[in-house]
Image (cartoon, rainbow, N blue to C red):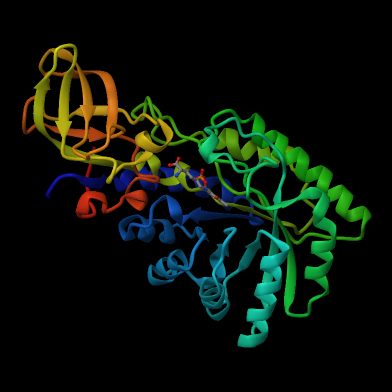
Length: 372
Ligand code: LLP
């Protein structure tokens, strides 16, 4: 396989899916929709589909990818602050489970598209719960200053509007507070917010068929071998214990990273070892074109030298892109690195391949199934 390439360990994926299945099998009102934005590789989608998960989409392209990979339209939820008309049309024509609507303006456009196409739509409103997820600023979404969702003071009239339109089936509310959340407290706060909101809505005569709490469960980037499967017990227990679901009410989750991050790694080859006056650089053939998370969020993926077991030495591991942010790690202690060694950037299954780009006219990375 030409480097750099993504390698997916489907056994890790299956272990993860089994764990999720254990939780959801005993709760028939719980539904996990895999957030396909994390990784849309057909190798993974096939397994995820086999385990009966639904899909969370944020674009027409994602809806098409889900359908092409055999997911039933009735398992698809569709969020996003900027849904284009053609994307709404595709969702309506395919008959998706639910639109997660992010503004009144969007609600009006969906109504218009329903009229034109002679369709009806299931609607949930995305609420901005103003809960701080305590994660990286670029991946927090549930605070009042974020662009996502409808703020609570503006919610009631929009719900009424959705309820009154015969083209709509009003289903309930949708939330998502952020991503890579390791401390469970924000999820507990979210549950409390949902409970309060539900009480308030009921006093106004509004009943919810479904509640969607989004995704956000984080993974261990520093010790992937110790924690290949995230702590679903801790996560799901919070919702089981804190959320006051009404009888018959459906609970939806939209997990992305927690499902696929640990099963993927980016394999790259060392092109050069360059000795500077203070630093030694290991220059690899992968760059932020293949894995942008370090450059974009200052994220760190554990780096492993697969080829060498020589004495540990200190390196900055950098890519070939003509930008100084193209760095995977500074002062990494690695077994002595040589030209031609294979290295792996671990925990790259989520938001790795899907965020790769063709900058510098580089080809998109290939992928294969493999064990590690
Ligand atoms: N639902 C909604 C509405 C979302 O916006 C997201 C992620 C998810 C679910 C899935 O979240 P997860 O379970 O994967 O945390 N590119 C960034 C992450 C961006 C997340 C965007 N939204 C990264 O590489 O860290």
